[in-house]
Length: 133
Length: 332
Image (tube, rainbow over all chains, first blue to last red; front, side):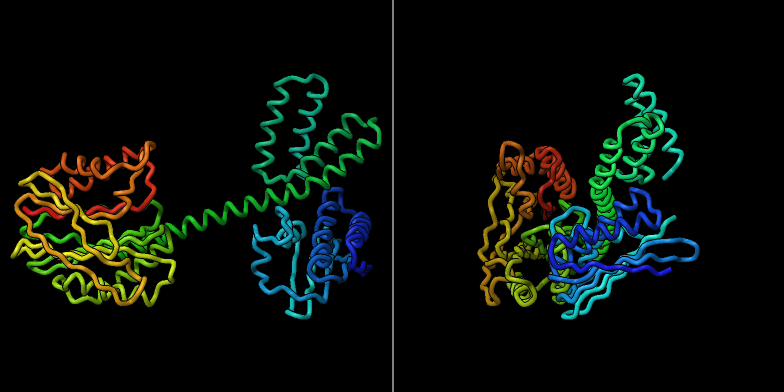
C-alpha cells in the first residue's frame, strides 16, 4: 500500500488544508484522537515554517507500513533559502517564530522519526513519520 | 495509554460525580503526581478523562464529546512545552557538572603555595562568588625574597577565569621573586593588551618583600590600595601607587614605592570583593574593615585573614557578591 496525496503551501489557509488532509489520513490509518492531534500539530508546524521562511512549498502525506505496523509519513519540501545552522534550529529554546515548545524540536517529539535535508540556496526537505502501535 | 491509570482515574471520577468530597479531590491530586512521574502528557490526561466519562455518563450529548477533541488539540502544545522544559532542565544539569569540572581544573591550574619565610608570617584566603574565581593570587620566592601578585578581573565567572590563566602563564615567564614590581606589571600588561578584548579590564598589584632589609617594594595597575598597619603608632594607612589598569594601552609608566616593616607591622592586600562588601544598610566602610582587622592583630596572619572573611561574610548575611581575596604579610 502506498497512498499519497499533497497540498501546496502558498497562503496561510493552505496550512488548514494540509492539516485536514493529515487528519483524514491519520483517521484512515486508525490513529486515536490524541495521536491525530499530534500529527496535525506537526503538520501545522512544518507548513507554517514553509509559509513563513520559504514562501511556498508542499506538504505530502503518505500512508506507510513498516513490518506489520501501519503509519503515516509527512514530507514537507520547499525551494526556500535552506537552513544555515541545522543544529541551532534543532536546539530546545531556540525558535524564531516565538512559540513555546514548538518549532522543529517539537515536530521531532510529536513524531517517531524525523529527518532533515537542507541545501543553502536550494531548499529544505523534512520527513517525519509516526507508526500506529 | 496505560490502562492502570485509566482504571484508577475512572474510579476517582465516578466517586466524584456522585459525591463531591474533598477526599476525592485529594485522590485526584495524588494521581496527578503519578501521571507526571510516568511522563503522561496533558493531552493524554484529557483523553483518559474523556474515555472514563464515556463509560460513566454515556448519555451526554454529542457536543460535549466534541468539545474534548478541541481541548485535546489545545493541550498538545502544553505537552510539548512540558517536554521541552524537562529537556532544558537536563541540559542545565549538564552545564552545572561541566562548570564544576572546569572549576576543579582552574583550581589545579592556579594553585599557589604560600611560602614559608624566616622573617615573615603570610596568610592568604581566596573565595570565589560563583564556581569560577576571577581573583588571582600568586607567590614567587627564593631564600630572602618573596613576591606576591594579587589581580582581579573586572567581571566574574568563566570569562574572568579564562583571563586569569593568561596572567598565570605571564607570571610563569618571569625570572624570580626579585624582579622589580614595575617590570612585572609591564610584562603582564603587554601580554594582556595583546590578547584580551577591549572590554576586559584587569587590576593587579605586585609587591616584593626582601627579608634581609625588611623592605616591601610595590607597584599597582589600578588595583585596590593595600593597607599598611604600623604597630608603633597603632594606625592604618593606604599604600598608594599610580598606574593604569592592565590591557588598556601597551606603554604604561607604573609608580614604584617602598616601605620598611618593623616587628608586628603588617600589610593587607585585597581585591574589591573585600572593600565592596555590602550589608543591607549599604557598603561596609573601610573603617569597619580596619576595625575587624585590628581586633585580631595579635593572631597569626592565616588566622587573621580567615577571621576577616568570616566576619564580613556574617555582616553580608552570607551572601557573597564578588570574588574575595585577602593576603596579609606580617613581620615576625
